[in-house]
Image (cartoon, rainbow, N blue to C red; front, side):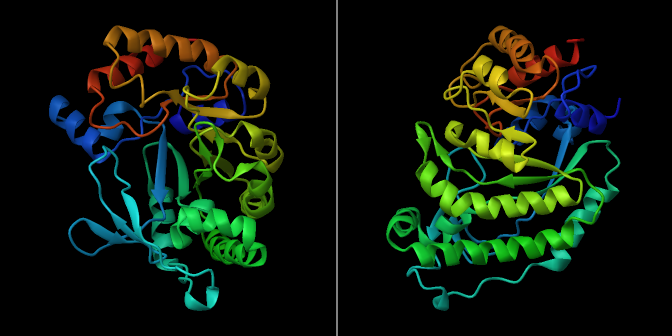
Length: 334
C-alpha cells in the first residue's frame, strides 16, 4: 500500500495494514541520525509518511538573526529546535497605518506546490502555513501587547486579524488548485494548563478567520491538518465543527489518551502523542518499544492515528529510541 493511501485511510478511520508514522526532524537530530547510521536521506531511511512544503522564506541578517516574510525579526537560539525566538516586533503600536502587509510570494508558493506535485515518494503531501494566525498576530505586536489588545482594543485587534486573513486567503486561492492532499496549519493556542487567550477570546478573534481558511481548503477537497501546542480541550468541539481532520501534537503531559480516543476518535485523526519533553530523551530502548505498543493499542485501533512524537525530534533524543519505535510499528499487523 502506498504511504499516501495509508494516511488517507487512517484519516477516514479505516484500519490500515500498518499504522502510518512520521518523525519530524530538527537539523540537530537529522545530523546525529545521519552520522550514526551513515545515511544521506533521513526521511527515506525512517520511512516517513508525510511530506510538507513550508511557506517560509526567512532572510539571514547577521549573527544568527533572520527576518521572515512579514518583517518579523528572529534570533536563533541553542534550545534544540530550529525555530528561534522573536526579537523584533514590526507593529509596535496597534495602528495598521504604521505597517505595510507583505504581498503573497506567488512564485515561491507555486514552486512549493510544484515540488509536491513532482514528488515520487508516495508520501501524503501537504502545503504548510505556520505562524499562521494568532502566532502571526503576536509576532507582529508582541505577546503581551496582543493579549491586552484583545481585552482593550477590540476593533483594532479585529482589523489586525482581518488583514492577516486577507493575506492567507489570497495565498490559499493560489495554492489550492495544485495536486496534493492536505494543508497543514501551524498556530499554537495552548499552554499546558489551557488556552493562552482563553476560549472566549479564541472564539471571538481566532475561530472566525480559521473557519474561513478551513472552509476554503475543504471547498477544494483537501484535508486539514492542524498543529497547535498545548491544552486545547476547551475548543476541540469547535475544531470538529469547523472540519479539522488531523490534530497535532497531542502532548501526553496534557491529555489522557484513552479518554481523548473515546471522546473524539470517530471525528479526529490524532498525530503525535509521544513526549519529546519528558520521555524520548530519557527512555531506554525497551521502554520505547513498550511505549510504541501502548500508543498503537490506545490510539491506533480503528484507524485515526498517525504515529509520531509530540514535536520534532531534537538532538538530545537517542536515534536508537526512534528506530526502536518505528520497528514496532512496522511489525505490528492489525
